[in-house]
View 1 (cartoon, rainbow, N blue to C red):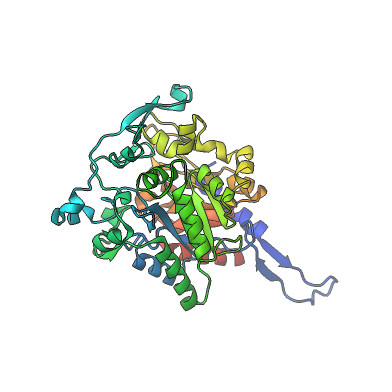
View 2: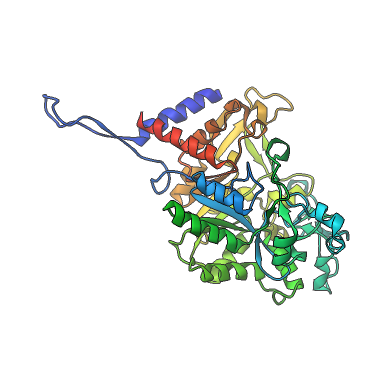
Length: 459
């Protein structure tokens, strides 16, 4: 079926299912009250889908800075999303990547600051054999590791290899104290940097996870609405090993998750009803948090590497390092578990997630399969003309899980061809399926799309 037909069908189905009609009184006179159209959403709780500010208003401002978060709240964001890493002094900082050159001005600072320049990590990692069968179907037989000396736990502070991803020649967030990060460095635009405003690059200081909570609380009071925080434990294994090497915990401990628990308790957020979500791509991080007493809502993020545009299926296994980065949770690689993220999206997988989390955060094409019909060799995202509901939202809702999908961006290069360069149309396609929330770099676009959806429901 052509994609335009599918979108029409989705829209029609939504309208048919979503509109509840209060019929006029029985009898032949037809003199009862007029028909009343009551919109009803297909979300798990029946409420409007949430617009989640991905790293703040990161489409217009350097991500995870005070301005990015405040502007997102002002634009109507329902939730503020952040990523958390541990600093050298065991504090939670709001940063997406463990390496700093692509989202901060560390390179410029290093030119004038010898102490910062000396922190660049140049030691190469080592290749380690996988523990599962080294077949082509499972991906590369070896992955890069920072465990260069098993007899010296502090040796991980020399290379910069993060969950199999090599960043030799960069600076590590774990080599700076929180105060150093906040006073020495400033943020800059990361994604689609050539297409986004860069005038504020290097001018907005980095902030802590606590700062984001404080911003959310202040904006909630100012705007007279509750604005939850959506916080991610980034690269848990890597962060924990770095933190242990920095003296933040004993071997085998979980300093990252323990810091998250302390953050929840300090801010009185450790309850199911608290305005916060804790998310992670690694199930072991969420499971540990539950065992440690986390009562706050948790979300299992689900990654993928690519799309097979011939049939819309997901690609998880590649012949390079991306198998270990986005093909399966890193804890599975370490444990010798050859499954991919795809296992999480099966009925048993969703049931397993429900035992430790309240929702899933899948990549967009795992919700709506993207394909090119008829298929053309070398087809890419811009050629996508067919979308198909994978049933993931319905299956997740059946399991009692909310679905928050990532990441919605405005740039035409980030949009499937079927949307014809209009990001609102992408939001609408997911809203019509009953998505519970969307991560977006452009808060205002998400709000605009939701308003368009609400008008659509009332027609």
